[in-house]
Length: 122
Figure 1 (cartoon, rainbow, N blue to C red):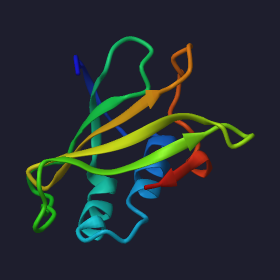
Figure 2 (figure 1 turned 90 degrees about the vertical axis):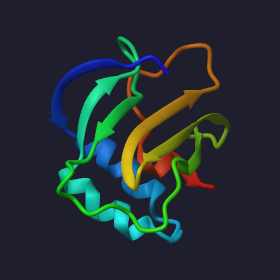
Figure 3 (figure 1 turned 180 degrees about the horizontal axis):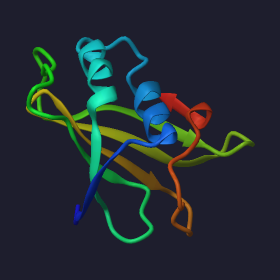
Figure 4 (figure 1 turned 90 degrees about the horizontal axis):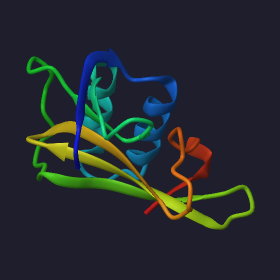
């Protein structure tokens, strides 16, 4: 992933909703990551117009216990007819949220993350 740094900002309501949805499976450690959401900031995009972002959790926020680096959660994205159009991936690093990736299967890159209702957590 090629990230473009930006002035850190709070996650949008949509970004927060997507992360919350991906953490809804009850997987061990999910509660620790949910607790990080209010403190998480977006600090980079994955290119102009990309809905994928890097995030950072301040050092004073408790890390998730027993976590490994990499993909923590992912979900299939469907259109309103139920056809698969992509997937969203939640990345973690050192017990902290680190990225939201939207991989699409369509010919046109989406401008925003999908609505949480479009995501089926895998």
